[in-house]
Image (cartoon, rainbow, N blue to C red):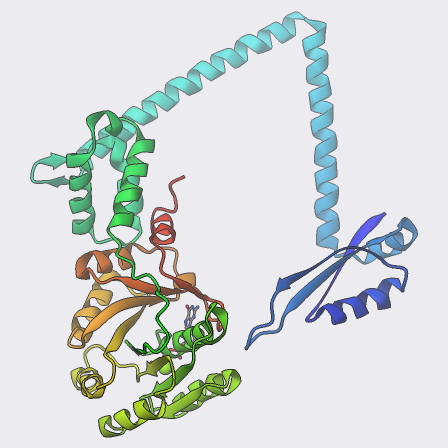
Length: 406
Ligand SMILES: Nc1nc2c(ncn2[C@@H]2O[C@H](COP(=O)(O)OP(=O)(O)OP(=O)(O)O)[C@@H](O)[C@H]2O)c(=O)[nH]1
Ligand SMILES: [Mg+2]
């Protein structure tokens, strides 16, 4: 008896493959949806069937040679391990001089390893002492070395890290400081408290929400809007009426990009060029619960382009505009800070970070938030519309920042 897996973009397609390969008598062991169909990618469904030995034998030949080689090696290794453990049993049972000598040798070896480990720990602490960061005569003790190194390598700004360390050392009870485990737990909790989060609130019927998305070029503003539109219109318990306005009418294809999403989701969309037309567009979409506004991406140094957005923000009379600064998590701290400072001529309410899937360090993101003290509202973790979006979660962020620490 063996198991064989068949996949298809739909369950029907996977089933057709089962029938073609094994016939009508196939015994299905399991079937499941691996990936649901999204607006932009097909689904993936899997059926596992049981096939008997006669069928399996010829098919085994077809298996790729890599799989066979690995299996062969594993089974050979298993045999070898078996024979070694058998001979070890024999040794132990025979109670000869040789086995006694072995036990003594192993004990000696264990003792030596323990001594070397102790030496290494001492050496590590000495090196740490020599290089230990000093702030206002405060020396960071060796027990903090691992957490300090991980946080520093995460892209966190050094002066922020030193400040936090100082805070930790000042407030942490002396007894707790002796154990690296409690230090890590304390540090983890502290970082979490330092990341303000804006939780997603349901809003009352009749209440309007207008959200504008601003930020540098190519960070994922339009994609995030498409994800949020789908989230509010279809994925939440209450189905909100969502309208979209795009101010990005300069670039060829930009309007079309958003139109495509709006058409797929059957949402109203308006394209606006001038601030004067903006109030008319808002009026046209007045029956929507939520209006999402896309803007043209601009370099943070193009002050005129950024400032022009203020003209649109000031036009809205029937609801204030919630301004979301979208930034990529792949941008280093100094650049994030520069982006924030230049976009801060707009009344920024929250930060959204994208492309978390494209980086393994998030200390930069932490440092920006620590510095500007604006809450994080959403995190984008991939290109898939609408699935790769999550509401901001400081547990998730801190665990990623301190990822190397178990
Ligand atoms: N890996 C990854 N790619 C993303 C993410 N969000 C967006 N992208 C990709 O980034 C590229 C740019 O996305 P857009 O949504 O067009 O970015 P934008 O900010 O609207 O760009 P401009 O309008 O040109 O300023 C696209 O290829 C997106 O699929 C994300 O979270 N992860
Ligand atoms: Mg865009």
